Image (cartoon, rainbow, N blue to C red; front, side, top):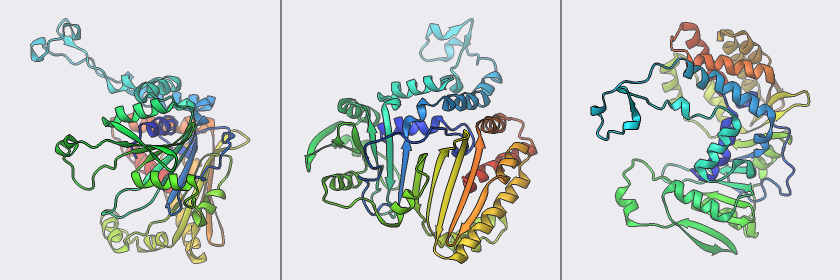
Length: 411
């Protein structure tokens, strides 16, 4: 989904990330008080759901962590920049006299385009999209896995104090498409207007980029997504279809309700032979046991939260299909954490990895980790030193690779 509105709210999550796992950075004081059930309009049959409390932008800690991330990455890069590029005015086709001074041309660094504080970043998001992310309350995202030959299926229900005209203008400007509205089951729906130039100008490989539809379910409640996803959401809102239910909804509801980000997703089987061939070539290991354990997973859910003692927390629950698989998952996860901790050449990050708690209850494995804000800032600085290190030392390379794998394997 490439919704401009979605960009405005997803940017909120991105702005809180400065190089470490989201579990160690995003900080909010619980979820907002809302007068709706988060999944009430999500269609049944989806394979993943996630909710984001957008009140994150109002938290002081978010400002602190954004500043730490900026200083550790962009700020460090700016201090190491080389002198302005020199050029001869005659070398340019269009000689803009203001761009040259004493024969030197100054170039705008990408780093200079990154706002130095969270407030400015949010203002920039509003300037680019026409929608203020601070006016959003909650984003509910959902997706259905489909094969290559089927059209994509994804959507997001956004609760925000945005005007309908501003939303449509933002999406239209972002997609360079005109939108026309119609009414479906009493709901106003906006769909892109097709024209011949779209087909003539578009040259792409693979399935076409899905067009974005918008529906206005109620004042301040918008649905963005592919045509099928939007239509199904309208059916649910109109009472003509069921909302998401069963194991996926149950797994979501069992996540911590004080989380600012909560999610649940069904596991998708992998081709064991292909994974073992490709991964085996890269690592020299036989990963059949790992792939088999993965294929016996059922649903994974989790929550990112702020604890009462002002620590940042992450809790993931892995629901498997058997106690044997659960035991395998627990053993593999603990072993993976131990290996990564041993490879990391940073005491703070190593301590964080070893503090990860992995427990099993029957067929369910739970992984939890909590991090203080001060430690999160330290980790951001360390990751920033890896990202901005141009020396490519052995230690830095080892730490970077290990950190990346850790973020994917334990967060």
